[in-house]
Image (cartoon, rainbow, N blue to C red; front, side):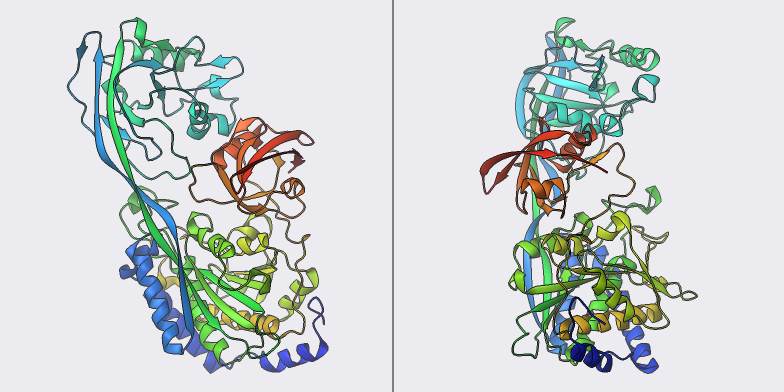
Length: 588
């Protein structure tokens, strides 16, 4: 058989080296991994949230483990926004010649994490409905908002007038983007309840150049007399009811707001098993698994209200993959592979594959020497009654994928991962660097991103089966005469379902970290319009189809109005230099 162009001698050698472990060895491996998952998912690890002490504890734990095995490690870090706090916050409202007592910060008014800082004494208030401007419906018609504080309702009512709006147009992101270039003093997102929304980190929205605050409607009503009535008319009639308060009578706001953004250094940990072959040891096979999880579920939680304040153990996601890498390190060290094997424990995966993207940009070995990547993410919940797992092969030649499938233990059924799930973990960062990847995954379950993803539900025997398989694949690649070449055809990622109103595709790979200068990308998908345009990792898109772009959500907004076959202008920065080109959008 051939693995790209695996030599017959290497294939024969691999059969000898890769024979399945004995039942006793599998049993010991299962017990070790079960114990490691329990340690990584313990309360002391605090859910391994990015930027948390728990993730630092987990990294230290892994470093000590590899030290006991005599495996050298290297730690790298990158900055990550962990939170936002109000350093100074004061606000008051007034009407005519009088003003009310200062508002109670945290109850009457609260900042949004994407707010800018600012101070002003008396700026006129403007009501702009729900901030919608689509077709004939225009909440801004006749309004002068320059230099004023704009009020919009945060939560859109369920009325017929808004039924035809796209999900992007209804979303708060879609409505807020209209203000990005506005010359306003500030923005109030009005709650129709009794209290302002609490301050919480929302990194999906980039920082605005003016203050953005939450305020309860009851607080605004004394100075905006007919506000309640006009909200009622909007809900009942479906017609805009905007009005500039400066005329009837003058209503104003004073504000001082200063936010402090907290940045933490988040770690990746790389362990190295040197190759034994004098000619091949410079070449590298990467085995990866993300070690981060959700902390206390501040973001990305599916646990609901009852889960608030609990720590998220993340036993399967991804203490299981982390423990499997630890076990593979133990086994592979004594196997003396021809090529070097890196065991890469990434952080930031839950926030958009930040750690693996950072490693690709700042590799600890020459990136051209990396010949393949195996990724282990959620490999701990195999059904003991029907042992099976899913295998992805983005960027791997079909012959190589078939070769890898042929190495599976006889008692393990291996299926394929299709659609967007095929690129939903750290291996995608390697695909963008044109490196073949293999993704090991035992499937989603009802405990995904909930506190109930605990160590007692892990199937240790199933993990041993996957580890046995992963070891066989790793050594087959490390010992092959010729590793598989990158295949751009298999690297094409189907977008699948769940993209809402987007009917076209462009093909950039997002960098999910927060940036102030635009939408950063980690590369372009092979065969995409973005690749044809020449976009590369590190580029910063600032304009797409005549729309300014600061975040991935601005980019998605622009895609929602795109049509297949349409030529659009794209503007981007490359190392600070402005660039521009035309791209033809393709149908999804």
